[in-house]
Length: 170
Image (cartoon, rainbow, N blue to C red; front, side):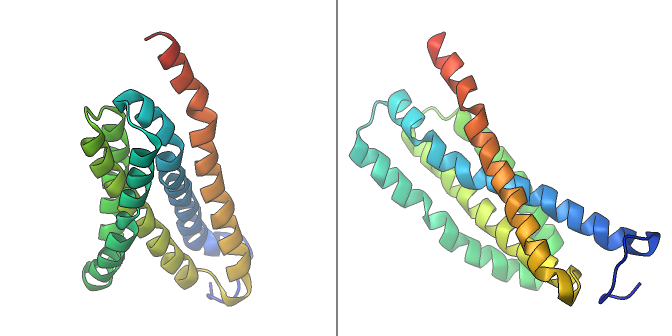
């Protein structure tokens, strides 16, 4: 196959599977992107903090986006696939750890890791997509990645009723 043309035949199986994998990673990235914003009020109730503390938490976790710049540099020097795998692992682990955080400080640390992982995933997925997609389909591909990320963000919202059930039984 050539990079400028792909007609969904078996010659294009590798690029299609790579792009499908990137879409799956974009779903995870969307989830990690939306989870901190949707959990602030639950954290405020759980740790009995006021709105000012919520605002400070929201500002603090955005440091993770700046830390992702360092991750991008590491990815360029040591390989994007390795950094992508680490970002997925750390993002999932930190998201799970945030659910069991015993204090607001630990919760904040978990969310900084989640934010760093998410921003790293988003940047690396974008680079991979632009490298793999043929010139005539990059806009379409990036749109599909955006929809995949939106689906992941939607999972967070769809899961909120589960959190409400847990609160009702406590």
